[in-house]
Length: 248
Image (cartoon, rainbow, N blue to C red):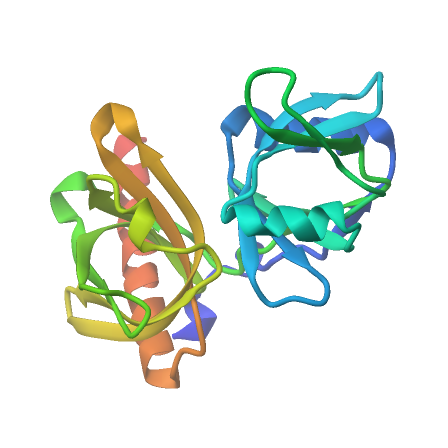
């Protein structure tokens, strides 16, 4: 089944952006979309969440929001090197720290200001068609495992061979942590339940509709589960193409 996916969907090799115009325009996408960022310090395994809150190409400045959890701030202030990683519409945008960041509370909220990075890695990582499910056909999912106090139930919004996007009622952001692997994710696919560990890569609560959106990446899938996922993706891909032809 793995050959059924279009070769056009293969991931592109990463690009290294080095001009201030390229760098600022791509970082601005993260800023304007309020995409969450993952900060990792080179000598530490813990991950921290932040957001890009300001960017000025003329003054060569960026600002990151206060880190969650807050204890990452002491590593920052100690000058430990770190990496920042974000995802915008399936594209990985990452960079290494470029000198120290300074705490700024002048605007009434806490942020960290520093220089625009010298280089940014831009990488289209999706290696498969990402299929969106119709609202009437949303699949039930459960997130469970040793890292959770209780099972969390939601809906599957879209899926690819490498991961999927999920929807949960209410604000569950306090129960989940970016970068964490949850060992019992399950989805009720039309031809049977699939179960696999997943890594949480995106988390956002939309207060206006009281809904939490999460993006997960499949982690160490078995061959059987991978074939289940590819079969479902291919089925959705085929249906989408059929509907496109009907529209024409």
